[in-house]
Length: 208
Image (cartoon, rainbow, N blue to C red; front, side, top):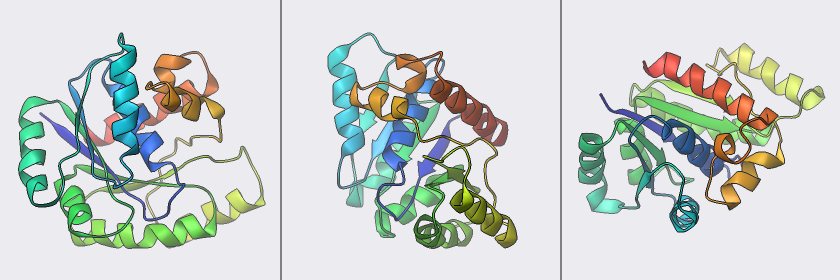
């Protein structure tokens, strides 16, 4: 059974594409994985090009179909893969709606800051309208601090669903991305890799 995970966030710099790449690389260790890059910046496609050029890493299929072809492309990838990870555009448009509608799980990365939380509100509303499961992911988070505590308190006050696993502000994630890898491949014994594996286990518990 294929599982579709859509990564969505309206605020730039939240780590949406880096999260998509790291999840894809980790899932590819034992599954047939495809990534669908419908973000106009096409950063995930560039990551995939680096991955393909270096060779040796677990295979990940790339598609960047968008617009009128998007619905059919999602169905095509569903038929031939175990996992589809969609890097959605940083605005709520038709493509974003289709990507959320197709998802078994919508992940919304946010740095622990009020602007990230405010920017996530539109995505959360869209997921609710489409009746999709959605989880917030604290990303690039400091180990502690007043701002992180404030945001976590606000998330709890609103009753929002937040994954327990937190990704820290670690250079390993960006470094692996720059090599066309995931952090579990580039630095498997690092703290960043341990955090990613914990996140992966939590996601697997949700999607089955």
